[in-house]
Length: 437
Image (tube, one colour):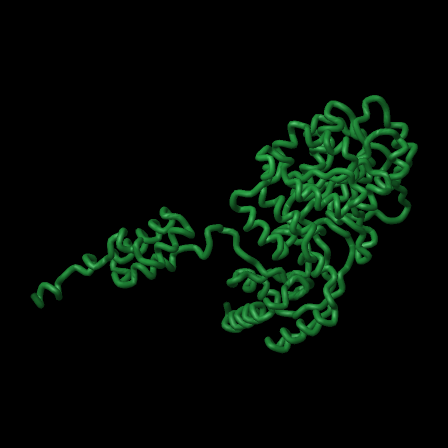
């Protein structure tokens, strides 16, 4: 018997798949990741054991360790760039109220159902009411899946097969190669350019408006500025042309913010004469990705009844998060924009002292195409440039910015409760740098 035990193939001790899947930790993993993903991890660990690379007793632990930390490949990041609305890392972080609202909406909800009558109801009526309450100048509201979609829907419903009159100074590129002329052309409308790059007058618009005009489009050039010998036409003057005036404010401010005096807002634009305003929900509003349409009820209803609106509508999760953003507490974007500078410096100095580095004055940015040239005074911990790569590849990843040969860690968009996490990340990066990593 002793000789048989000594010569027994250890592969016989490798647990069967059904036994492994019955273990509490792997059974729980099935609920989180799905059976196929867990079975694949189990099969991989069993294969390692058969190859002699893993003791049979460690198969269960190895299978569990091989599973991803979550069911999505999206990786949480810490925004230490000082750019508040950072498009590449998800734009606006949601408030806790918005996150909880999305969790509530994940199940069955009355998204377009009237519990009193048992009949179909207006989709997202709570969200639409919240937007109207936040912008009293708006008679009606509509929500689609992003800002570009709101603009495309507006020009399609108002001007398909007709002309959209727009100033040459507002022929913008909105990012990733998408340009306003291409978006308008995709709707079937014809673009009628007026004025010049730096100067457009009311006469320019008036000469272009005629029987073929579907609307006048005014676009806030949110990602650049033209200064010097310039002229533009206000909404009140454009409204005298007796055609719908669509104002794309872009960034999503519902009301004026004294910190951003040059940034247009929906309330002011509608009061000044815009027929409808289009905007994004995930920029300065601080909510989920969404396209918001606000304005005269007849025009908004015309957009809502257009067949394209069905293809562009948002889901219940977006509606819930947007309503919670509009009705709820101040979202993170607003808090970061209006950061208390003495508190921000105190936090930065504590972090710098903890890792033995220095503090430098920096200027943050609004980002997301909002408030171009608007500097946000702040400070940052200065590190060697190589630290930027080490930080973003850490767990969790900390995204800093490299400027003039320096890695700058700016805490403006980092919640105070995450300071200890950032400190550990900086210590790890500096240690790896010292070790030649």
